[in-house]
Image 1 (cartoon, rainbow, N blue to C red):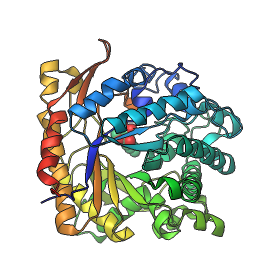
Image 2: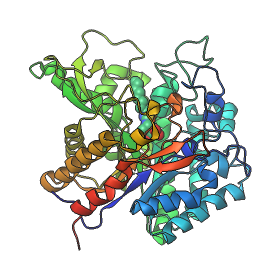
Image 3: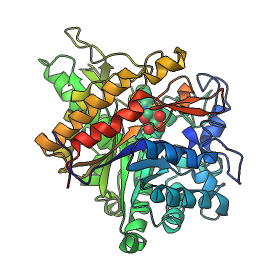
Length: 476
Ligand code: NCW
């Protein structure tokens, strides 16, 4: 079992989850600032207003990364720090941009390669209010391209760009279930525009067009001189049939992945949506114009994979409701024989099952022709961690085992299955604002004491990754 000699590994975070300083140096509000202010939306009533205070602690964070041996760090830029009102005719906030330029310089000086995510869910609020934000294809994609160009130009030293993080989450959780910002649901008493049978598919389409435009801009105007690479990060769970003897359940396993991953990846690799989605959604799923196909098809230099969990899949009989987004199936943690997929965590959607990681790496590789893959997120929360003493928290053997199992499954996929995986970023460098779950769920390899000046305490898992990767990465 091994990994290639140029394999990069490290940790990942996102701006709104760690930075805090939401009113400083000219930053404008994002849809998450607005969403957090609505009572009942965040489990503990919190927000990212202070978070880990990373905006003020860049040196401390880089020292931490260095001490853990990381060779790469994935973080996101806050669009509303760089362009507070978001749009292509709105002013650029030089202070916000300079913050990231310096951060990248400091990372490189520490020998850590930056992987920059341009968008990790925190759309400038002004764009949502001005023209409906992600729902407006022409405006959103033009504004995103403009924002991306400003970042490419200002940060030529970054060689790995990710356009969007998990567009599935922004589309489905933001425009169907209402669990994430901007919180649209079908319930028109709660959302004036809410139409969860259509909006998520429109938003997904608009992400693809905006991705295509940013990639085209990068390839034409920046890549020739900067020599970097660009891709998108998609999330998706591994699937196992609830009843392996039932062909309908077996078929539903692929459909589940198609509705999560291929929704975005098929247009990027093949120029069209999956047949299973078209069949169920009909004309509620937008169609690509020939110009859009040309823009989107072939627009990944690498595939960014976020992966956490697996599910047993049971086909549902009958016609699915119009607002179904899973593909007419149920996701379960137990199968027909009562076997459990994996132990509980603090996240209702996450149960470790490392073999699923290897299986999904293979599924993606076969479908998309063995693309270069960066695992841009992988990690776990831990049941009850928030209620433990500090002494117990830092002894996070559960998380150590999670990383050990998952990283070894990935190394097997590379060595034995020919999967072209080239990097791994563990989620997350530190505990942070876990969106609708607030601060109650901790994903960090570093404990953050929010009540005491955001002091950081590396857990056992933080220190477990360097020896693990040292033992797996081939020496030159
Ligand atoms: S919440 C979420 N996550 C976590 C988050 O911290 C990170 O920013 C994201 O990239 C860890 O990785 C991603 N994913 C959303 C999962 C929610 C699933 C809900 C399904 C309901 C149908």
